[in-house]
Length: 78
Image (cartoon, rainbow, N blue to C red; front, top):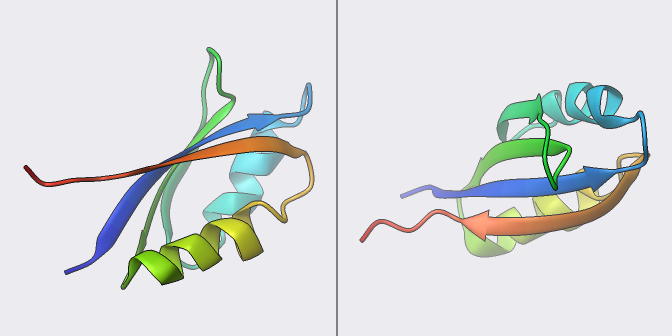
């Protein structure tokens, strides 16, 4: 079973489109869109394990220039 999550991202002013475009190219990211509201980009990502998901967020997504804060929301199947 794959671990999936939504990652809510805040960016520097004017950087949302560039951040979404860059993140959409990262392996494990299935969707990255710039949005309005308290977050600037919403990402859907997946990995084989929770640890791999954490590494994806910390090592790849948070490393993208222009990101100021992320919030990872794992998908649960109740």
